[in-house]
Image 1 (cartoon, rainbow, N blue to C red):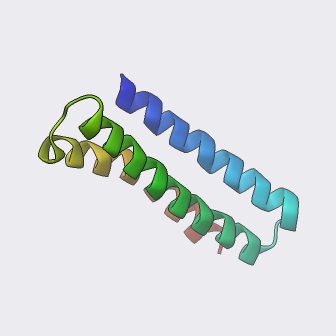
Image 2: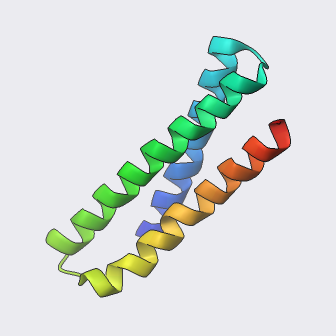
Length: 88
């Protein structure tokens, strides 16, 4: 359940980045591309922090937490890359 909440949080962050990019620069393609790049960087940091909490606080091993972190990162990241590709 926690994994699903984190993934949904990633989609929320993606929406915020996308709308912020549109609000700042309008429908201009370079601004949307920059917003997607910023999302990918932010999401990688959030995923790493989530993995750190899983290992240090919840007691999971790195080997057990790494595949989950990959899935958590990949689902919103692939969506952002598809949006970035479709906007260009």
